[in-house]
Image 1 (cartoon, rainbow, N blue to C red):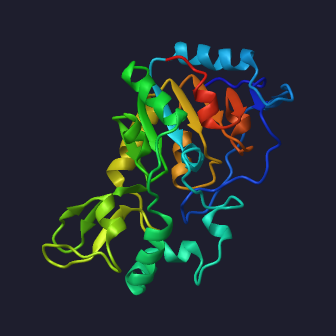
Image 2: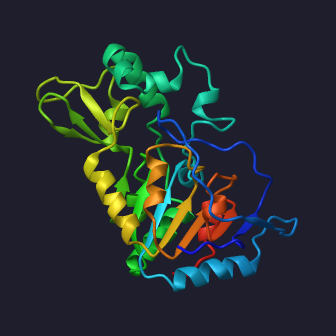
Length: 288
């Protein structure tokens, strides 16, 4: 990817403190290779047509698009994040959320783990938003080849996306640790106390990556392969501070790197186009 000192940033609001997605990994900062300059927009917070047209032109010129997304994609559907003002990290519990969602807490305080998990991680009635739907549409039209998500809500698949790499797993999949029997979202949500297998009474564990657990190797390899072969990478709804997931961006060697996020990130200066806004609002203006 050729350095572009005129990378553009389109802001829709002043950038407050960035979010972080679910992970226990430490963040590191990439070395910027470009300098981004803010482009003023009008006071009614609508996007400049010229900039949306530029994003459209980039998409039209690309044949192998990959989308890499984080918590900001799902917050527009009503799924809570972790570190915003109303996020889980700013609520009061007997233990910090990162402790309650750890593998060791799951093992040592299993009942407390499931109480928190079912109350805060299993959200009923959420539906795909404009970002999920547009990405699925781009895939159906052959432009987008893969979605890589840090979210665990399954909304990309619900919107119709087929090739989805779920880095942190999914609340829609659950399995008995003893016999391997599978159970769905509703079974977990409606269970009392520690969910037990109907066949062998083993504990049913969510297929999500807890703190202290590694990411699935096959999922990571698939995500890396998709990014390496992409000619356009769209990063959306993530502040790129969650590692190892955020490190996947470094595998991109294609033509266009685009970042759409409400807040400033350390990768802004490395992108060909940066739009600061809600991913759903931006993607809804794109034709597939």
